[in-house]
Image (cartoon, rainbow, N blue to C red):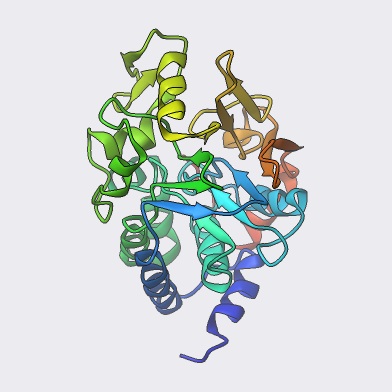
Length: 309
């Protein structure tokens, strides 16, 4: 393979043109090698921009980059997971993020979401999308292998913990996350699963989650966790927020960042990215969805009919 392979792939995928099966195999192998070197809690230095769920909304991801100030050659990024499922372009979305990771490995961190899973993607669209676009499940399998190596969390300047879902009654210290065995399918229960599935809520401490996985956790839990671990904030995604972001609890020590505008092409919400400068005082940039007609036009041009879940 020539050295400029990733550069050519990046130019191709920026136009929402899927890579060949052979190119995807090479890209996924490169990704796995990179991700193997990352820890379960990947340390990141400010300034950095934190992004929430994308869910296959490729054109809105391009809008996100425009809003935030550019690709990772210009801006450092942490993405909080849920790159795939529900949108029209899960394949192209995850491919673009992988290409950017391969080209700028130290400037973009990809955290695992609950949808980066074999079981979930077989229900919510990514599996079927890969089958439709390639005529087989081979590329889906390559991507699932990459999912297994995605980091579980990132930490900004040792103070802001970035995770897809939330906290776990089995995890009191950050070191308990650092020793988890992450190179596997997302388990059905336990600390690993909870990090990807839990939600903050107005509950006393811990409560069973209506999602069927993870927990609901209250302000007492986050306050104690942040105190014990020397954190100022937990940044997470995982829940639709109509305003693009939302602070939870009086202490404002948990924030949800949501980056899929007009979620599922029908929810009418705006999206946001969270910019963290050296002072660690987050600011938010709000953006809206690109026009539906543009998405549909690209969809028709690519001859990828009415797929949508």
